[in-house]
Image (tube, rainbow, N blue to C red):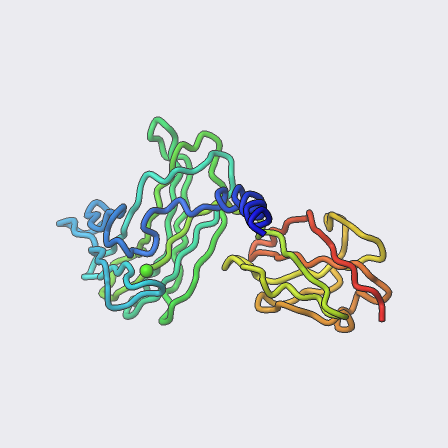
Length: 268
Ligand SMILES: [Ca+2]
């Protein structure tokens, strides 16, 4: 049992490490550690006074604290730099956000990629209408060739007198969700142990008459929502006469791992 546990831990470690969040103190549980909260250079007005970032311990998406940006008639941001990222790689940038009284001002995550000579290479500000309730924003972006590091910001787009809260800021390599280990229980496929990352948008079920280890050239027999953890074979429209099945988690950008381990379900 111990040997099995160790083998399992070793087998999942590289993928988990590769998708590590490169943002330090991503949920503001350590106060302002790692973040710059006052960035007056970002203000439009003169005298330059940007909306201050504040650690708010009275509200949180997770944990006990989050970041708040108080409009105070300006625009503002909180910044963390440098983030250690790889060049020529896809990254997922995500955060949770809510706000009030923002008027026409928008807000969201802003990422920039810089080279070793501190030249700006590329960046993107996903400034969105600010929701009243905690809402997850998630985007995928390519870190160009030559990228040495990144800067992540939580920013507002325009002068405002509102407040916007950010929590759980993440920058991770955009890899497909980890493989789903599916079990056959009678005439049912079950994957209730699957630890789905928040990027999972749905599951594709693949079916064939013979065993298979890749779904790259296959058409899915069914698509199921992200909260599904089981399905009856009889409910799979494309599975008539099929005996081998695989379940694949697909993320919001349609990334999926094509390598699978299928399971056999004998016909009744
Ligand atoms: Ca938090």
